[in-house]
Image 1 (tube, rainbow, N blue to C red):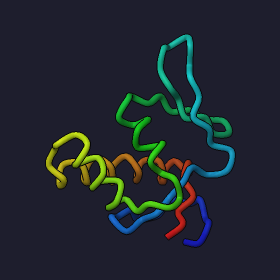
Image 2: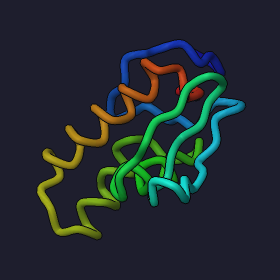
Image 3: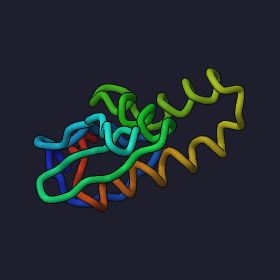
Length: 100
């Protein structure tokens, strides 16, 4: 997996960051943030933006999930499922660099 941007199986141990060329930008027309990649874009809601910011290339999905569960006081299992599903979608769209 080292540094590749193709889709990978995402789990709690996954460490990822945005792939080269993928940027988080404000879309003033739509009033929301979007992920921009070469020849594609993805509109994000507030929670998705929080997840994207958390994908720092250092913390694992488990660490991100733990932090969100503590912050939001929500069940860890539910948050883990949501985070993994969203990160898997980003990976499938080749918007992430999977580091481990």
